[in-house]
Length: 73
Image (cartoon, rainbow, N blue to C red; front, side, top):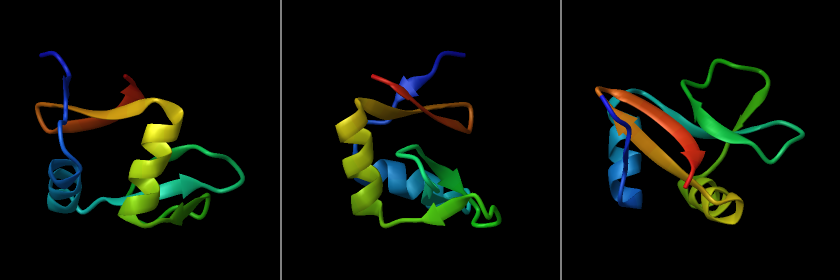
């Protein structure tokens, strides 16, 4: 299976919420990822902050077979 880019912010948020995931920033870095909120190394951020970080870093969310991954565009 190949990874397909998720096209819209709304779809990214919908997929993440359905999996119980929230947007987070790795403390002390500019790295972003999804979390279930159980990791002390991560800080929960807003969806606007998440999408802004993706744009600033040239990243996009990809999905395949239920897996979500943040990668370079």
